[in-house]
Image (tube, rainbow, N blue to C red; front, side, top):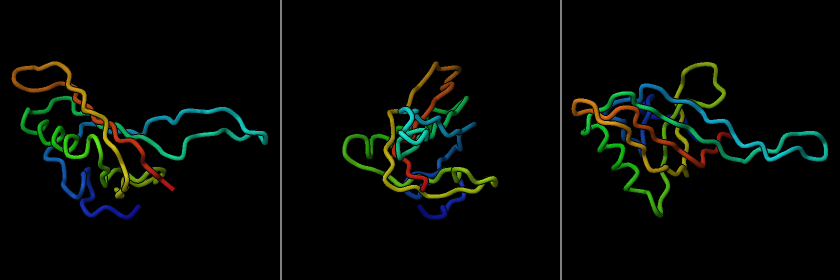
Length: 123
């Protein structure tokens, strides 16, 4: 985990041509309570980016990121630094991507496209 070069959303040091409309850290699964009363969580986190309205050209970049590593690879993803009160970005290595979801088409654009990033180690 290192400070990101781009200062914005990126995959393998390539900035998104269109930054997401929104992005958020997903809640981790609660696996129960250990013998000392502490909640058990997985070691990794997940992040979701959403584009409310995106051109097919910009969407093809996102699909290309997924296709490049979909079955065997991992990537370095630049995301907002988890738990940081400032809006700073950090590179997280060893991440995997979930196939992007593509919603309805609207006048040649895609609505509510999303991309989930998995296997993010924040500490």
